[in-house]
Amino acid sequence: MRVTLEEISVRKAGRALVRDLTLQAASGEVLGLIGPNGSGKSTALRCLYRAIRPSSGRVWLDDTELAALPLRESARRIAAVTQDSGADLDFTVFETVAMGRFPHPRDPRDTGYSVEALCRAAMRRTDTTHLVERGLLSLSGGERQRVMIARALVQQPSVLVLDEPTNHLDVRHQVELLSYLRGCGLTVLVALHDLNLAAACCDRLAVFHDGSVVGTGTPSEVLTPSAVHRVFGVTPAMVPHPDTGVVQLHYTLDPENAEGKQL
Ligand SMILES: Nc1ncnc2c1ncn2[C@@H]1O[C@H](COP(=O)(O)OP(=O)(O)OP(=O)(O)O)[C@@H](O)[C@H]1O
Image (cartoon, rainbow, N blue to C red; front, side, top):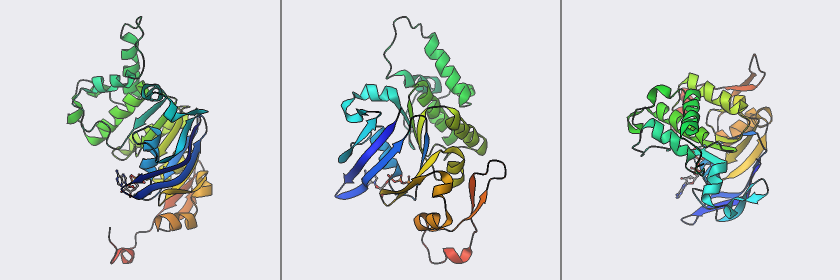
C-alpha cells in the first residue's frame, strides 16, 4: 500500500510544527525519517496514524484519502508503535498483544484459536513469549517496546509506522527488529536517530529539518558529509560497510567542541 503525505502543515499554539511537508513511501518500501530533535518526524507520523489532524494538506493510502476512512478501517491498515506506546496500560502481555485484533471484526466461526496463534507467532518473532503472563507495567523499557511491536504485528496491517522503535532495545533486538522490517514486505515508515541503522535498514531516507523535508533519497545519496553537517551540525567520516557496501558514519569526539555548548 502506497502512503502519501501531501503538503501537510500542523500548527499548534500559533506555531507551525511541520510546514508543507510532502512525503511518499511506495508499497513495500522501508522509508526512514531522520533529522534532529524537534524537526517534525513524530508530528508527521502522528498525522499518518491519526493521533493528530493536519491543519492543512492530505494523507493518502493508495488513492484513498485517509480522512475519508472510519478510524477502525484505517486502524486495520495502519499499525503504529509510538515512543510512549503502552506506558499506561495495566494489562498482561498477552492481553496487550491480543488488543492488536481490536480493529478487526470478529468472525463468528473464530474459536479464538487463530487469534491466539497469531499472538503466539508475534510474541515468538519479538522474543516476548516468556513474558506472556507478566503485567505490562512490570516490564523493562525494551521488553515493553517489543510487546508493543508484537501488538502491531497482530494487527496484520499493510502499513507499519514506528517512532524510534530501537531506542530501548539492546543491540541483538535492534538487529532482529530492523532485519524483520527489511524483509516483511509491508510499507514501513520508521523514525530513527541512529543513522547507521537507518542506512542499513531503509530503502530510502527522508531528512527532516526545522519542520520540513529537506532531502529524500537512498542512504548513500542522502548521507553525505556536507548534508549531515548542514542538518545535524556534526561532520562524520564515511566508510562503506565491509560486507554490504552500505554507507556507515563514524564520529570523532572532540572535547573542544563541547566547550561552551549547551546539551
Ligand atoms: N502538542 C504540541 N504543542 C506544541 N508544540 C509541539 C507539540 N507537539 C510537538 N511540538 C513541537 O513540535 C516540534 C516537532 O516535534 P516532533 O516531536 O515532531 O519532533 P521530532 O523530530 O519527532 O523530535 P525527536 O527526534 O526529539 O523525537 C518540536 O519543536 C516540539 O516541541
